[in-house]
Length: 423
Image (tube, rainbow, N blue to C red; front, side, top):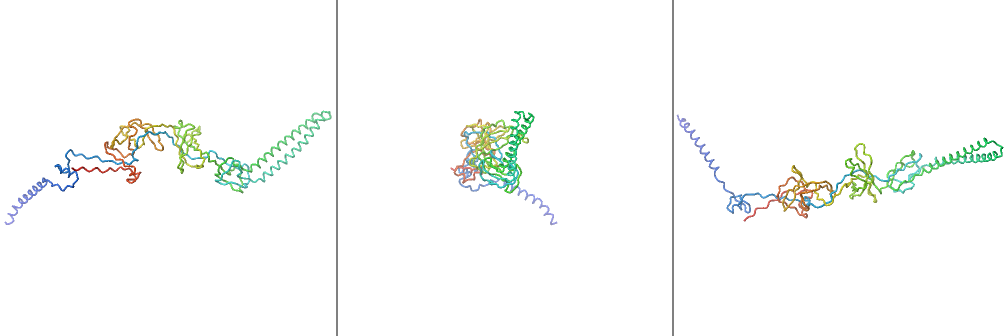
């Protein structure tokens, strides 16, 4: 009996409590939020001072564009340059004058008078062979010659005597003819013996080896005491006064290469460039690559260049002065064509351009601009994506470039927006 009244009123009381709680929550959501304290000098403070709601301005709310900062090396000024169409060449250097000293006769090497790196003159004795064998051969040939001459004297006297006898009728004409034939045979024997002497003398002379050209000894392949065969390579001599580069040119470009064209050579390990010129063009293409060898000659009076050095050459095919040309990174392309970003009045401007021929200005590849840009325009050369037209731009002074950031790091971080003015 006592629990029935409690159970009867418990459910209505619970419903009333839930309804009151929901009503209080809804009234709390509709209550205005009181603004907190606003710092002086901020846009919110300025708006409150003018009677406007906090965080708004008197007019339409507009966000100021972010200012971009560039380093001087990220900007290029359009100026007239000489645009050259260049064909790149590469290969190893070799000496124009190169000679090999070979053994002209077989025998033992008695002495070699020079070593690698030593300078020699044309005609200088550089090696000697053992002459014992060739001295004996020469003596034998001379003995044979003396014997043949003695036989010739006997045959000459017999012929002369028979000639006198045949005139007087003491001997027949046939006997005289026999003596005349013996004289001719003896004379031929003398000529043969003289040839043998000359050959033996030449072999003896060939034991003394001389430098065929002036230059430096690059290779020495034998030592005293070695026995070598005929045509064995003893020494190599190079003349470094004139060097030559053999480079393969593709068949598609060979028609534009002619003898006499200038070539600028850059050799690995040497900072300065060398001027060369095309001196020969091979009439046949290489079997594997179908490229045509071209020979570039360069003077080397100071002997800075060495045989075997790797060189890269730039052959100027065509030169065009006074051209407006920009680096490749400054010219961008999309579906509408080519364009560049310039700085006009401190703001970024996009300008469509018409590109032309490609080439080099100095050592930098560039592309010619036929229309759409004037000389003196400041062009953004660093490709950092698309820019919004009208974005303010600030170019850092050259003096502060090193202090602000390294030259290799582009200053792409936007500058802080100026603070709103307070009244």
